[in-house]
Image 1 (tube, helix red, strand yellow):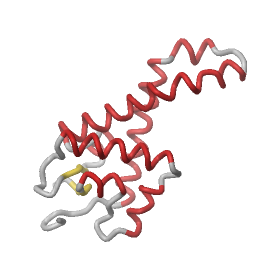
Image 2 (spheres, one colour; image 1 turned 30 degrees about the horizontal axis):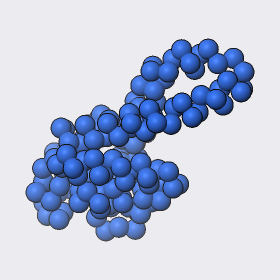
Image 3 (cartoon, rainbow, N blue to C red; image 1 turned 135 degrees about the vertical axis):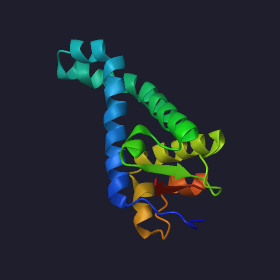
Image 4 (tube, rainbow, N blue to C red; image 1 turned 90 degrees about the horizontal axis):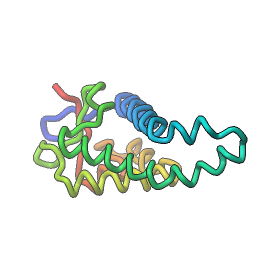
Length: 140
């Protein structure tokens, strides 16, 4: 599956992940700006957590699905000049992009175990890469 492609390093993938986390967090802060800054007590802040769960999950799923499907890369990946490809070296299909985003979310929820998997995988695939049958490669 990796014929003629250069697999993205763990460093590049990690930094792209951080960029994406900042972008998504910023979007969430913008959406919930009033609620966040009107919370005046620790109890008010604690009561916000359940309100964030569903919208945050939806925003993350849309962000990752949209960018991987249309561009083969999130903004973080684009910044690091890496992209996600399928077995035909093309952008993943919508179904593959969505399943990748869903498994990615699941992997995050269980202590990033699916991300750690890439350290032991010869193709550096995470769980979400394996499910979607994708590779993350350097863009030339």
